[in-house]
Length: 462
Image (tube, rainbow, N blue to C red; front, side, top):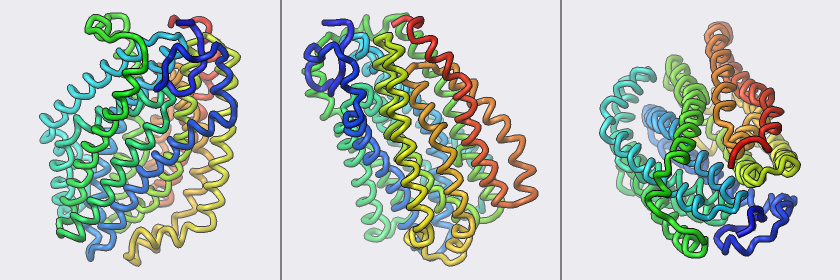
């Protein structure tokens, strides 16, 4: 097997790829890889929007607040553990660039085993999670009671959800983005359909939303395993237990996961999930509900741009693994260009349609009014998020976890310092201003470290 080769879609035989690594970096190929990821990622906030719309049309705001708080707890947990997807992508992509089929298989096995262990630990510790989570998010008693029911139902599917992270990361590293689209779409369409059935059909309320999500996560993993099976048969290479538990690779995996985990904890804490929602909850149920509505639109942006960030993960990882600094630079430049174009389209859409879109998500007049009053912050968010999200993908592809971790700690520290004074002076506008600053700082602090990433391309071991 040649040491360098271009990857079309690894689901076909690895040995068939030509030596020219530039082919996957063409503009059409980047779009063909990014578009399925964008479409599948967009079903994630669409799912959140449906959850919001379903309970948003129930008669009392406590239902909407409970889903917002309950899903916040899982966003905090799952964002913290999303290293399972990110590390898998980077390590698989670099193995592809190095032409190592055995390692491509081994990375998936290691990640799935780790996901299973972590998921079982979450189930065992659900009581502690509830105490800590609801101690941080100080909502009303009615909201907390419903949110606890949501948590205890949905956490039963944690091992399956985490295994799905690893599986999707493997597909992205393979550039098999069609499989990512199919698996994610099956999961989220099933979730939306079950939401409607359980809430409006069976009248199960918040508990129905949680059960729908848990069942859908199981269906997502099953779909991913079915899609992986033929790709594994055609992949080439062999899988063995000694290879899976090879000390050097395990050390690399755990070091990378540790750094991405710490980075994700910072993101999950400040990135609208824990800190942001907790601060909004202190201002009342209407504020937390309005912020939850607006955050759905930010998630549409985030998961849309994430298509090009994931393309950067796979392409930077492949060229980095092949030790080609020139092609790493080309991958960065081309994926970032299309991310910027996509963000510009979001600016136009949100600028024109924010009012009607808010009305689709809730019929509560006070929630609508407050969400419309703060909708302008979405435009500012669009303008600052591109740099941060694209650099995330670039650093993950290069498996430069320590740089990501250190940059995030700096951004979080500044965010926490300025958030209190801004809220004291400007209320909910101050909270949104602090959050926008945090997103901007995420990008700037990573940009400072990018030159070192380029210099490391020809120095790091395979």
